Image (cartoon, rainbow, N blue to C red):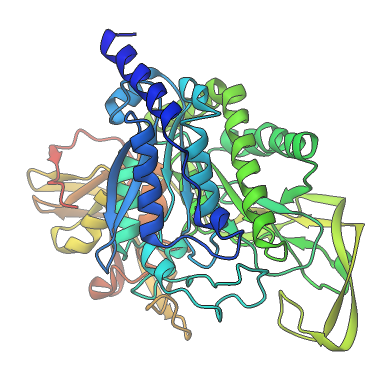
Length: 537
């Protein structure tokens, strides 16, 4: 340790001894209120006064002009991604308040930050923490007691799910139409490349017996070893510690198909990478989605989220080196061109049969409320928790696959929106420096079906057709996207015409759609004459 680092550490210890640790709004209000944006910023600044080695970056600005803080806590000398990577330590990213009605993560993230300058300061010797405590800052300020009325507190109300554009930020990971999502992906996930992302939420839906539920990546196109280690080692360890250390019941996120007939099964949600947990898996990295139980009181939800994050960090201390090796292996497999086929369409499948799920016994009652998951019928809660054997429909399987090419090629007029999207994700895009004749596969469109229902401002599009091989001559300036790059899985998902959540589905190519999809697949490795495309985020 350098003399400067030692002096900084001594100054921090003196400051801590003479400065009172800040409390969150949740704590000072006895859990009747949640933090506003200015409260969170003031809390972070108070932490910095205690420990000047805590750094803060702005990773995005919202539509209403609020700067989104990324708090960086690591060993002395960690000030940017370069210095973080040089330590060889795992980087963990904590994301809170993506839905501003689900405020528990925001409060727990502040409490964790306080621990990192006090009771758990030594944790920073083993793990580098990135904390975004208030992602949906605009939605957070629209606080009302009329939001999430089935949620048990806080009494003073919560914010809204959407940002100021009325976009759900947890559906914007692929299309990147919000400044928040663009900043998050470019300036956190791409720039800092965290090994593990922890995404903090609160449930809606079924009455069950778990204080918190969780999920890994659900998309089978993510690296198999990352999914297997998450389900086989990482999450079972965290669940065990939550029971052993805190007497908390936790399990994989889901809902009953029928609250009155739980034996019909426990169902997870969605495999598409518009959701952050699935998107992160396509980047070859680990992810844990956390869902505090909405029917707990506010204090209980904050506390269980706080405990869960701490146990995750304990798991990273234990398994971080192995997780880094698994992630590095996934990157290397792509660089070596080992991807052959990946899925484009998926369906839910049973993961485990005859597994006991904790159900809150519910009965039909004409004076009750609708099923919290389906909105149908009229039921009454009893408060009795029983274990019911059922099938856990917790995984997805590809029902349609496509060959992963050596590269995709787009003609120069494919559009700036496509190029900007790819580059914001961090996908490497090159341009051909001369006219090139190639044997390619191109998707012949038989039908382009737009969804009747609008979603996030789009009528999602499904292409139906078939692939055909042909020879084409592409002009200089055509875009080249090789798949033997670390984000090859993501590039595949974005550019495949039949992808259920790619750029075709979101309408990025609508102006160029005709009889063929304006994306070519090059199956063989060729010596392209190309240069890196200009980077314009």
